[in-house]
Length: 334
Ligand code: TYD
Image (tube, rainbow, N blue to C red; front, side, top):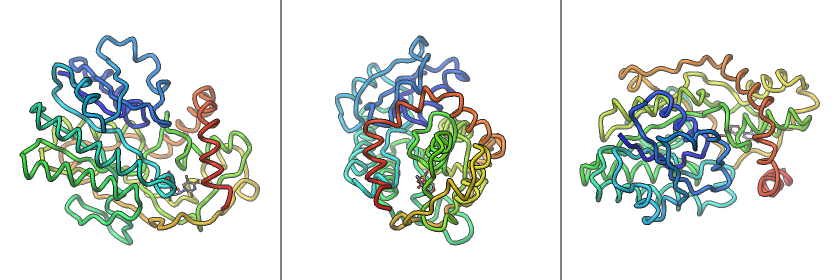
């Protein structure tokens, strides 16, 4: 079998590629990645030597690049390629519409034209929008509230519409907030850990009582693999950690583990516009297919902090150049 993974140099994508090469000896992986700021070859260091891995540099919005990556044919496409950071989508929405909607459309057309047996769209619980109480189920209406989540919802709906209209064999996963090794240090956990290692303040938006359901990246990657292999085309599967925490709880944990203090290192800054207060997903459907998250948060977070401590050579170069400009634009006025 040969699978095309898009965005395989990103955070969840690279963890998925490693998982597949490790645990599915009969599968070859083609990785199509545009190498944007978040697509980092160092995320797959060592994998280039694997004879079952092929890399193609290109944009999912470009049909010629998609064609080249498909080559003689693939048995499945797993679409990780996306603009993913909510704060960047507030600063500059257009890239999100392009990659997350138009890019998904280009891949769906390729799936249709080439008769590819499976297309899995990696999505997010953010498409459900803020949920005041209870859990979001796969059949719930979508209420995305940021340019990012609205773009992801656009991609999901295109995929599901292709299933309805053309019987395209699509699957959609909606994952919750993910943490672990190789996450670009703009997201809450890697940003805070790397700031704290450097003895810098961490910027908490508003009161910090927003709730996210955190899942370890390996559990998320396994959820996607499980859906690809056992899911029913035309269906959506939530992939959550079952581990709700406020941002302040996360912050306290990171501050303490890094040996800093809340008084000196936490700065409450202006809230994110349209900030969703709470996400929560019901994962009974994927659990019913035999998947479950295996890494308890207490273990995963300690391992993650240790990974960032041990891998300064990975993240230090990322916190320079473009990142510093972004950081200034995003945080200087708050
Ligand atoms: P983030 O990692 O950006 O993921 P998402 O917005 O997709 O959930 O943020 C997680 C939570 O942390 C979210 O409620 C916003 C908050 N946050 C901060 O308080 N400060 C920050 O500097 C960042 C990046 C996030």
